Every structure is written in C-alpha cells, then in structure tokens.
Amino acid sequence: MNPLALDDAQNCVLQHTMPLGTETIDLLQAPGRVLAQEVRANRDQPPCDVSAMDGYAVRAADLGAVSPQLTVVADIRAGDLPTLTVQAGQCARIMTGAPIPQGADTVIRVEDTQAVSADTVQINVAAEAGRDIRRRGESLRNGEAVLAAGSEITPGVLGILAMVKCAEVTVQRLPRVAILSSGDELEGLRDAFDVHKIPDANSYALLGQVQALGIQPTLLGIARDDPAALREKLEQGLRYDVLLVSGGTSVGVHDFVRPTLEQLGVQMHFWRVQMRPGHPVAFGTSAGCKVFCLPGNPVSSMVCFEQLAAPALRNMMGHARLFRRTLPVRLAQAVAHRPGNVEFVRVVLSRDALGYMAIPTGSQSSGVLLSMARADALLVVPSASQGLAAGEQAMVQLLDGTGFQEINDI
Ligand code: AMP
Ligand code: MG
Picture 1: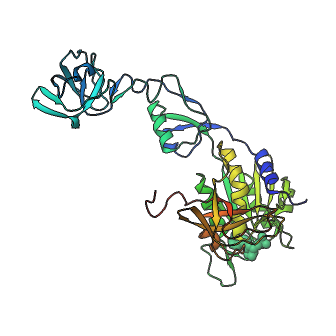
Picture 2 (picture 1 turned 90 degrees about the vertical axis):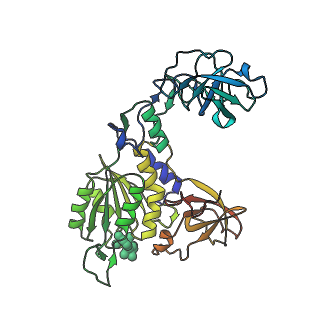
Picture 3 (picture 1 turned 135 degrees about the vertical axis):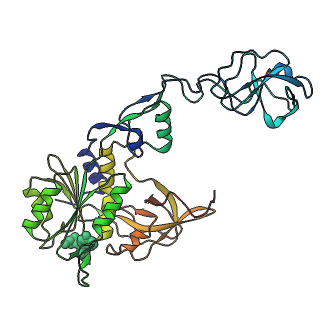
C-alpha cells in the first residue's frame, strides 16, 4: 500500500464511520452528548410582556411633566397574574419578570425614582414608551425549532432543554473504545521498575485524549510481541466499537499487529500516511469495529489520534464539528521542512498586540513526549512547504487545555 495524503486518510476514516444509533437518557446525564432530536419550544417565554427591572410600571403619557408624582396602586411580583388596570396618574410597583399590568406601557427603574410617601412615588427621568419591558416570546416562541439534531449539549443547551421541559433527551450513543499497547519492551504502570524497559505512556496519553472527547475508554493493557498473545488481546479489542492499538505497526520483524488483525478478519484500508510524526499509522475495519494502529512513538501516537481517530470518534458521536479549531498565528522562529509530509510542530502560544505567536516546545523528536505535554497547539506545516520563516503566518490546531488563560486579558 502506498502512503496516503492526510486528507485522503481523513476522508477514508470518515467514510467508514457513522453515528451508532440513539438512546434516551436523563437530562442530568446529558452534558457533552450530542442531540439526536430536533427540539421545539413548547411555550412562549416570557409568557406575556414582563418587566426587565425592579421598578414601577407606568403610563408613558403620564411622564410629560417634570418629575411627575404617581399613586402606587399595586405591588406585582414575578409569577403574579395582575387583574387591575393602571389608570392615568397611577403606577404599580413591579419586580423583574413580573407581568406588566393593563394600562401600563413602560417601566421606570427603582433607581430613577424617589418614594414621596407610602403610596406616592416621584419619577426622576424622562422615558420613551416601552422602556425596560421584555416582550412576550422574546426568549422562546412556542413551536419554534430552538435546537437542531446534532447540537452538542453545552451548558447553555442544557439550560434550553430544561426550559422546554426535556427531562429526558434522545442523544447519539457513545462509541465504546478499547486501548491496547503492544511491545515486549513495555513496562506497565504498576509493574516492577526496570530501568531497561520503556514505561507504557501511550495507554494513558490515549486514555486522556479519549476522555477529553467525553468517552470513558477501557484499557486492555500490554500485548507482548508474540502472535498468540497479541491475537488474544486483539480479539478482545475487536469487541468494542473502536480499538486503538499503539506500537508494532511498522516494518520491524516483531511488528505483528497488522497481519494479526488481518487474520482476525479486519480489512486494512490504509497503512502509512504522508504526515510527520505518525507516518506508519494504519486503519482497518471489521464487521463491528474500527481499528486504528497507531505508531509506538508517543508523540506519533498522540498526533495520529488527533488527526485521524478523534475526527472519526466525533463522527460516530454525531458531532457536526469533527476537527480541531484552527487559528492563524505568527512564527517566533523559522521552521525547517522538506516537502512530502504534512508536519505537526508542537508549539506554545503567547499573545502580544499583534495576536498570537507560536513558539516550538523544544526537541521535536517523535519520542520526546514532553514536546506534546507542554504544547498548546499543533502548528501545521503543509506538505508542499519548503520551510517557514520567522515572523511568517501559519495555522495551528488548538489542543485540549487551551480554553482558559492565566490573566483576564480581554
Ligand atoms: P514500535 O512502533 O513498536 O516500533 O515502537 C516505536 C517506539 O515507540 C519504540 O521506541 C517503542 O519502545 C516506543 N513505544 C511503543 N509503545 C509505547 C508505549 N505504549 N509507550 C511508550 N513508548 C512506546
Ligand atoms: Mg514495538
């Protein structure tokens, strides 16, 4: 198989993935999930014209005089159903969210008034009719489609679902994901310390990446470079919707992952992608499982997950937005590049008056996981680039953990 261009590889994984079906869950379990139903408003909100402020509901026609004094004839709170009509020279004390009584057409904020006696108030401002009234249906109109299927259930969406009384909500099912590391040299997190072994970082970095998508994966542990042991672990993994295997996918004499998967009925769709790090990545499917064979080098494994597995998982979750948000930045230093592969340089972002600047995180060797651990973003060097100059503009993909900053600099 020839190496594929990265966008062809991405199209391939997307063609082979689709949402897995729906389930109905309690609203309390819904944050982060993807709606599988259109949601319509089932009431006007607010249900009638209401006050936007604590103050007095008045007749604008009464405000012509300088500092008019009005008689307070009622006290209306949110949830009340006032039946009186405000007559000329009268007003009603009103709280935020309370219905505007008949006759009144304007609200004067309490700060713009002065109590003269228990039932007389002086208005200290001129105000046009309609001021500080929230109109019926301003937030939601009965019958209006307010959320489309495919919406992610963010906190605001959760609030809307509660407003339209969706105690239960139909969402896309989450894929079940298994993670397997392979290699004789690997030492498990709780295995005895052996300085000659390689600690299994990939299982945990991948776990973090999958969890960041809102899925709790299962760790299958470490498969040794032995066809029988590997086969047993891969068989377990193929019972999940998605299997992520790292290591053993290259051309080493102990790299049995791909042939063993094929023996187990997995059809491999590609092996090797024109990207760096991450060149020896492979993707296959069986009847029930999508398998990503990620390179063993920890940075390669993470970068391949980001470029190929994350969009596929989000596709299966029913998201419309499959790819990391990108941002134009300036380069703090030159980046060398030979044409042929899309390259992902791990960078931190710093901001000045001109915008964001990208600074590489140090050694870009695919074995140096700290380069990824410290990164805010992946700088994308296009395949055809001959290298980027200091100060040049380029695109970065924002990584997890970049949604917040240290100072409130707006
Ligand atoms: P491989 O793809 O199996 O040839 O592995 C490439 C490199 O990645 C080797 O140096 C491995 O020791 C290393 N490696 C493989 N799997 C892991 C893992 N789970 N955690 C950390 N390093 C790994
Ligand atoms: Mg290996």
